[in-house]
View (spheres, helix red, strand yellow):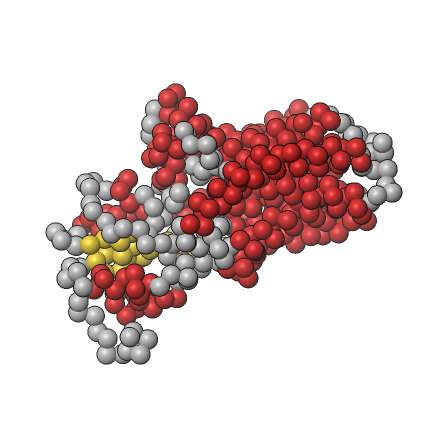
Length: 478
């Protein structure tokens, strides 16, 4: 069996692994106990004791409960599993993938990963994403290793890590599913090649057929749960891909694309594998987002593959310019890091400048007996000094499919003031929600995070009274 990359890479040096681990620890641990819980972190922190018993996505909640039992139940403790897995994921990516793409390319990739804003965000976020990232990265490595080394043991490890990633979130089922599609593509496009194992392809496809009989009913049940809610997150089939590119970050997508072009010429089997393991989940996002509440983050498991391709591009530039000068040979790598720095720094700037407690404090200071509250960002009740009754959840405030006028007009008939709290992002509110607020409420408080990149993050508070001046724009307010 011919090797995919020629001679096997030497064992990575311990000093590199230690250096990567230290850099990961410093960048990920800083401030983790100080930052405000945001978004779905609140669900994890508060409901982990219930959700770890579920058979859907139990892994992260189980880890949170274990850490609560060891360190106490301060809410920030719920971030520790994500923190630890994020730190492990960086040297792990280097250690394993250096055997496929070479030591230098893997080192470039690991260093780029340290500065990835998406990876940094979820490393301090009490949700399942880092578990998906870590074990998907390992699963993908063993899938390609099995294909090129003809080892059944590699395939077993790939399946084990795929299963673990699915225990963190069910959407990680696309890791083994996209790998199966990639195996088929490799078999069809490289049938006469000696650079992959046809035995492994046939063995894995047989396993997939048997597994599909057992797993498909479970996955259908999960899909029914997601679709029955009737919510979407406002991206749509057209916008979800640009949104995914924004999350991954444009410099990484561009450098990853060039890395992919290089692999097509140099390592065609690997290029084919990565094409379908990246492309299949993206296609799923495009098809599924109009029908269910699905986020670009549900394809988070493709991030290590994009990072790997970026490392390949950097190494190719280094090899082709190494005879010129050292600074020139590292130009691509330096440019990528430089372009990532604004978002990397903005992560910490946002965490220190924006706190949902400020919005909660404003509400409590101005609340009058009998007022209604409609709060879209999660976690409101975890931060108040006393219990408040809030209006029932209506839906995601970027969901354009909802009839917001019909949902919100009953507020006008209540006879009470109503406080409405929304997040402010670059993605605007659903147009019909925004129009309703313009017609029936006034913006009385807002706070924006300090950032030095293109992202927008903040909170807004609107007040609905019965004295709004509707003498203008009355056509849109009917």
